[in-house]
Amino acid sequence: MPYVPIRHKVADYLKWKRVFDAHGATRKAGGSKGGRLFRSADKPKEILILLRWGNLRRARRFLKSADLRKAMKRAGVKDRPDVYFLQERARPTA
Image 1: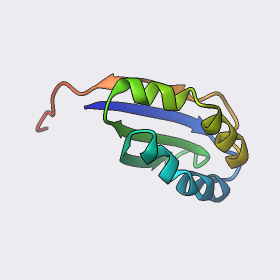
Image 2 (image 1 turned 180 degrees about the vertical axis):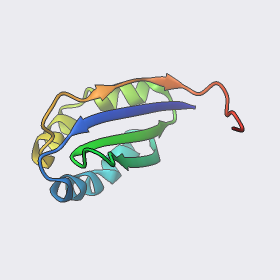
Image 3 (image 1 turned 90 degrees about the vertical axis):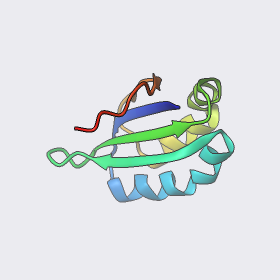
Image 4 (image 1 turned 90 degrees about the horizontal axis):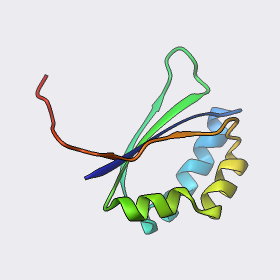
């Protein structure tokens, strides 16, 4: 299963979260299977999103979309996100 972790900084977490939540249906339509949201304990304006995708092709297309760029701008993303495209290979037990 492909995963895409995305790390970026936001100007205002609550504003960002509202836009992120509102964009959920668009992510799902783009192939996202959900994921997890993390917020840095030391730098609360730094966010890490870990999304699961049905396939990498759809994930790449979504991450390049103009719609996503517009949503990020509305949400107040302050830097260029760090994005990685990963394929799960194992689940260690510890």
